[in-house]
Length: 639
Image (cartoon, rainbow, N blue to C red; front, side, top):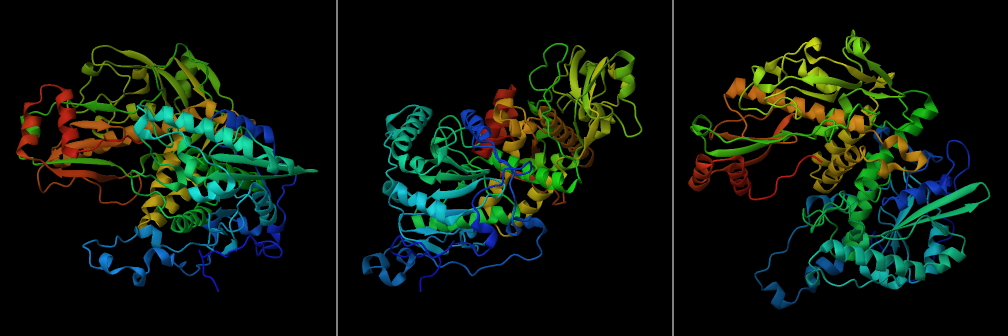
């Protein structure tokens, strides 16, 4: 009897369906208000350069929120492909060499659960498998067999359309999905290579998908690294996404990478960070299955082809649950920036980017360069803040100023204020000005969120300027009629999933979660990401601005505490990261493990050469070069 992740030799579909639950025998969705599918939604999303929107759907008992389940089955660890590790097969020369077997990463040894079974399948050149590793068929060596497999599997969605994952170049070759865009060594611009590969892949797929189209499937948008399929029968619509793992790199945006590098490729991981799937097909399939099950268990959804869309899928799952129960905040409309008097100065609430030249006191007794940052900063703020929604009210003059005064403080909104000149205030010289729009030598009239309004009114010792509302001269406002912690459950799900990843040393899923919340919050500002009608509620630029502002003010408050307790001031800050020159024994990080607290990001001992570089720095450019040399790699912001 074969064990998990061992293939059976022939394409012989078992009798019945692969799923144990009778709910899985129906591969179509009812066309009612709660679960209807508008194929145009998916086409619009594809044409916008992103994977499809997630439609609401009927959930079976197997599709419950895994975070609320008492017990989840824990299958035995799948067997490892014996051909790859069987010591008896090693020849004498290899056995006598100095090579040392490299242990797989910790996460690749974790068990694969069953939570994604019935929602996804994995296809390799050797055969097909459930995510938990149960063998199903032999090789899928034609598009006709792929159609047969999809129909027989009767997969159901889970926060995203059901998924068929094609893993490995061999599986692509069997389906005729072969491209040869050239080598990265032959091009100066990796983006040009990616574009060429993406175009070639689309052409190959159009030429080979005819059997699927003849069988009644329709394409939602142009096929690429994901082939979005839908099939309607009467009032029911079935949707399946075929994800082609070897070609995911052909879809490149800021979730996946930019310029001449590849970043995190969603649930597949990051080649540069060492979290991508194993090289060999069966271990890669096994690890992908584990990650799919992990997402189903801890996030309650299948992963989207980009991290941002995974974050959106979780939001939409919560939205459906709250709509059915009638409990909790449900936001159904976009929160576009209202028309402002004069264009905003770039971002409404920019992240900080600031460096200063250290003086003799900063260098006295120091021998380390330490970078601290807020643990999962944006996720922490997203769960803490109250966000506004609905149609905002425009107020001017005294009405705007009066609206900022309330029993619970100013309501969620945008406020046109006057920032005083920095040099007119008694502010610390070794910190950036409290707001990025503030200037040292003159007042500035600008728009800020309620978070910044509160921050400016905080005492200087807590990072503010100690202003009264009258001091800020509020002349105009956009105030929202409703507000609440709209992302609290979303943040809770991600927070608990992150803890599970940390507790098991699962760096792969931990990094994936980080890209999910960063990507989703980052894309809130861009309406082009959410053009489909059912996705427009994800366009919330004021939410994103508030989150950025909250992280910025929280970091400034910590910097003031460190100055009081340790007498140390930062020499640089980028987004939520602060860089300090410290003595050997100094520890400025927070003791708490809670999200949003300061943890050590980098800590290096400075050589005499580097200390000399800081001491001789004449401008901030010199300081940035010294910091870069000390940390020896690129510093990255939160988004």
